[in-house]
Image 1 (cartoon, helix red, strand yellow):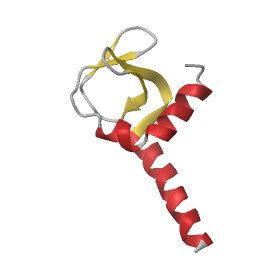
Image 2 (cartoon, helix red, strand yellow; image 1 turned 90 degrees about the vertical axis):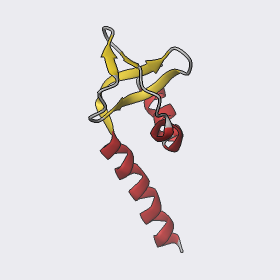
Image 3 (cartoon, one colour; image 1 turned 135 degrees about the vertical axis):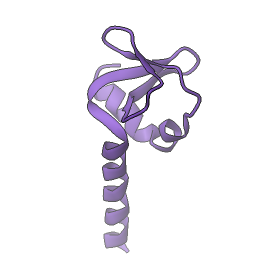
Length: 78
């Protein structure tokens, strides 16, 4: 049981690192505020200086990884 939980948590962390650019600038949206790191390969981002503005409509990955995105924002001082 403990082993399965550890594997699930590790898979969640790996999926988060796979979906997002962890070493990049943060992304934001006018309606939702700070979202987290930029999604990999998503063309709906506009560079606005030291951050990205997300102009897309799909927020499902940001909802799925909300705890990790919040932790990433906290680590980056946002």
